[in-house]
Length: 324
Image (tube, rainbow, N blue to C red; front, side):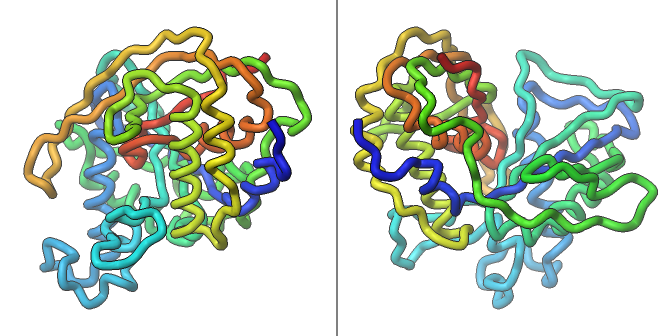
């Protein structure tokens, strides 16, 4: 396989920040096995309450302030009636919640701290103060079935630098660090023949309009390529200049050695669409074998950005378990 430019060089336009919010319940808080189904909807409403000028409008439809509204840009903006390179209907959301997934519901008490991590991509980091205020708003209205309230104890920037941005008792929210180009932690020249991935939250992928029950390596590469390209195009400073067809063809030669996967179904009620929505995906581990070194920067960046459907809920999270 011949690569003129490494993906490490080509992915430098990809810039993102990761933050962690340490929260303490004011009374017992019950969250489902996947917290994203509870958090995502409530957070969107909190964000809208913070920024919306026309409080009596129930939707953004017809609002003359929509194009300048942070909520609309991040949560509602679509491409209907517009030409777009990716043949999609909606601009990708530039954030993901990074949340734990377990086999049972979780109860937090007043003695517990629970952490919610947030990824913001590209230009969306400019809106971080609104995300912070939305957490503060949500802390007052409460989350979960019992509407449990909480306090924001601390906010930390985890990536690209480590810094405490906010602590309880202080009024000031410090600024984020400057964005930095993504650089893989792995040497481009290193030899990787085996790669094990662990899918930490349900991953839902489609190929040729069909849901995938287990992923070939090229399915993973296609998904990361699509997501990074869209995010860079709509939320970055420049588009990615990568011959994806070449990499996908090369990825089709990578084989599956073993897999230990299971399918998990999830359900949530969408108050906006007035109906229950079923979504889910596979979790577990899979081992790939082949000439994997050239793909490592892409696989690494996918482990940060999530892949597949419903990434704003926290779906599509995986980690690189090991390499050989």
